[in-house]
Length: 265
Length: 237
Image 1: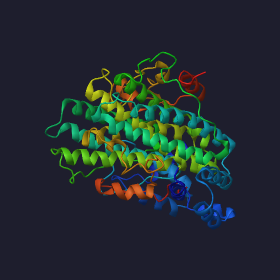
Image 2: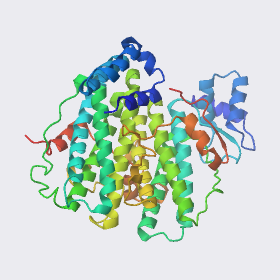
Image 3: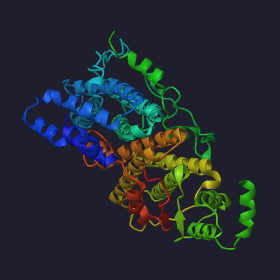
Image 4: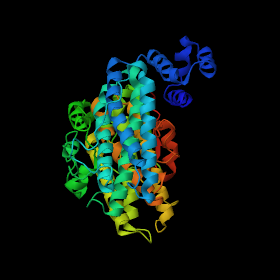
């Protein structure tokens, strides 16, 4: 939780952020944070201020909570992974440690924006109710499920972008896009390791057709019809290449159905 | 509007390509509104026409302007990777060659998709200057690739809030995550088994990627493009 980074980020997308925050008298609030208020109170204080300041729509708040569910999952998964002895080969640890760090930052960032509207963290079952029993004992399984979670996040954010187009939600749209591309970097970084180690055959940093496990996370990724243009065969490129060139969105319902497999009941 | 285009295109028919800016000025003097001018300009330009090196290229306005901005960047990337694969640097592993060929193909598909989607509104084919790149040198090629991919990601991230149509935002989203995959792959080639694929040099302390407006991106890529790109009519916010 880094309050000053969040404010500084908002400044980048919204030069008037301090003006918007005027009504809470920035000076007094920030002085108070520095002196008296306990650290626990800070996220709620800031988030409440920002929500009011941006007047983000209820739809945007809802999207953020949806995203938070996935960020909770990613954050706990990778944090648990890097803290599990004898799971990740030493050479590959920097990659997963970086992913875990970013996912923790995403959780903190979104929670701060949602404030008291943030949903609590669910209890997760990373075996996917028995589908991946060795997820924290077999590196191949850990890497495979890990990159699938990241691919899933990419699809989930993409599917929600259109719900963040209200003028007052622009700062949230921009932040969501900036998280979205980080999730894509994550999956590609993990996929690169899988490729170099030949852990899973023909895994590349991008998604070919709808190849991947669990299948529900990759449904529809083989689409090549883009905005009325058939991209398969463009300039002689194959259907595989055309499918790789575009990542597909996933509906909220499909995302939640996939995620529910990893949420303990 | 089609009728109007056909009529006017006859009037300004020339035996040499003229710059977009010159055409726009012509229209202004002809009393056209800027908006009608932009539509007309795009309408009368054959999308396969190479623009002359050094010509000004105005990206246009609104969503079409942003898509042309993306099209310009995808042209740059496609042209770059075609040269990379044609003159693969010494010491490239087979896996690296395979990935670079795939990336080349993705960029070609992006370029062709945008050209098709823009149709008559597409800017012409740009000409590039890669004199700063040593295509036989691994560090030069991958370093340039990293710059292009990170720039592409930041450009799409910064353009998202400038788009009006949800369909265009979705298309930008479908492309940007693939650019981010490329960036991470190239960065992994440069520094394997490190944090570099999503390094602290680009991802900030909130876990957010770069985001840049066209006014920041265009000057950064201009040295690689022989035509002068103008984004002055692009949406500002």
